[in-house]
Length: 111
Length: 114
Image (cartoon, rainbow over all chains, first blue to last red; front, side, top):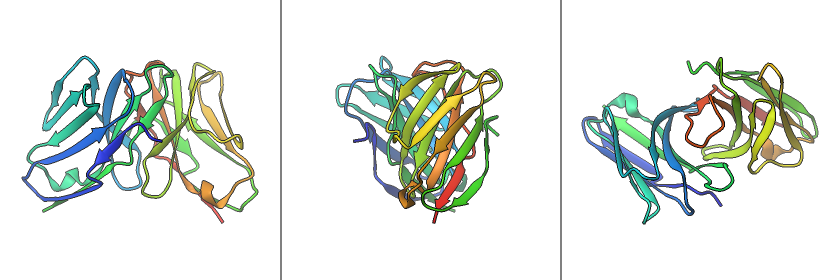
């Protein structure tokens, strides 16, 4: 089964609100990355957090990582209609250098 | 534009056939990754090549094979195609081979098997 699983599967909010999505994984990781995918297009890297980091910021994005709970969260503040996309977390496999993407959270930001 | 190119954009073929998908990585990137994304699903990691050598293998079927050429472009070959192989196939590249590298994704090839 997949290493990373996002929650919720879908999220609908109004422009200006904050959006929070979560990712859980199963085994030890080196790092966790978040990607965005606009409908049917390639993924775009958003942010990487290493296993020894707890929080990271990039513009309106805030990512946290709790390795004891094997979970991460992505917070998008002051959301915009352009943030409408699917968001995926991706983890590596510590021993085997494989990469696992979750099934994604579909975010809809209403103008 | 990520700098990763994939051809063709769309491919429609019949069951039992064989197709080849092509990927050119960003200039200077040595690693190429292949992923399969079925409708409204996450990405399944298939395989990674680094500088011409297979580096990591995911859930790649035996009917699928890939290679990376000396000029670093890569091809994914899908044979004995089945209806369930219909999906978006993404290629990504990164500068090195490590798990901490950012992967840059191409626009994908949409494969439809009829």
